[in-house]
Image 1 (cartoon, one colour):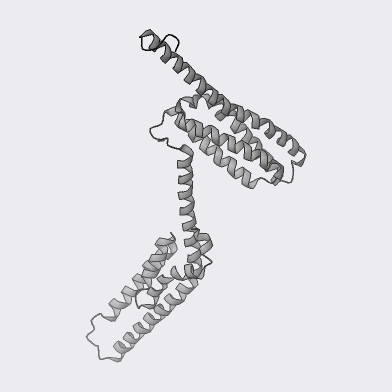
Image 2 (cartoon, one colour):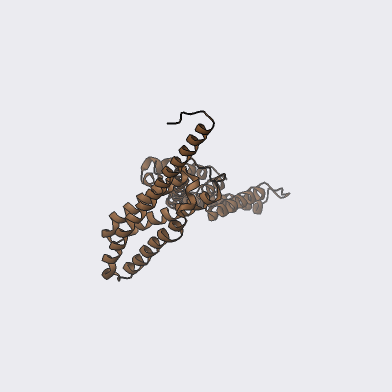
Length: 276
């Protein structure tokens, strides 16, 4: 569920405004601000919680302090003054809470969105690495997948922000092919070294070129080279696909070699027919 959408929903707003009940309970307004400060990760509300607590405690101690002249007019006026001051703090806390409510809901929704985004990124990372245990993976595979994950996210962001819609199809095809390459590496760690040049030159250069082109477009320039950028991407599509096919071909060749070795060993040890 997307909390960012629910922030406009009355049920969500009501549910996340129940903390305001504390400000209507005398001397408990500090609990309300302590709660929202912790939930929205906002220090200023924690500061107000401490301030309210200190003022409330001070008023209570002042009100109940001993006084030999408790029948005097000054004593009565002093007690009345403390009550009035306490009432003023009580009312101010209620007004403060109502003023703060909208900001809290925005900040809390942002915290929920950030947590959701972090959880989604963690899921995407797990999906990207497949069944590979990143901590136990061989170093070449680990480095290849780490670099690939970073570049795939960069490519996705570029696709989302690209102003030149002519490049969308080519960018999507490059992204999909690269994703297949990294999924293959995740499943076949022994092939990680075979994409070193792809990881260190071809994919980074495509990203660099797209970044530079995007910068020119943001400055209102670069329209005259859009066609050249499109042609370059079109040339990179078969290059990326060939990289994937080379990985698959190498795997098939390795399997054929292994089968031939097993066959020869079986013949030598008399475990197979000569026409196997």
